Image (tube, rainbow, N blue to C red; front, side, top):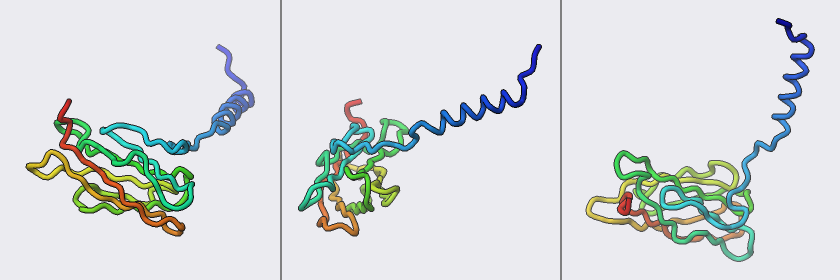
Length: 153
């Protein structure tokens, strides 16, 4: 059996690494079109920060399950992205027992995970405030509706 010359081997490895490095490994902005995505098991909410006047979100209201599955499911993740892909996103939710929020996850991004709907209720509506600090936009106050897990599943 013949062995590959070390210089040929290194040239092949270098070629493979340069090909991998040339691919665009940055994630695209899921809200560049301004339209929210997902369903009640996971939601992407777009914050339109490209216009003038006031912020707008899509969808509004945000409707999600409290958990991804009826039994032993994990909390549902809600991601907020700015249409511009920039800026610091600040999400404040009332009551605070609705979701756990992680602000400034990355430029133009914040996320939250749902908490359980209180006992005896089929859903809980929470008001949240979207703020882009260091911008001219006033805060915006849409709703999150958390629905008791998977009632139609």
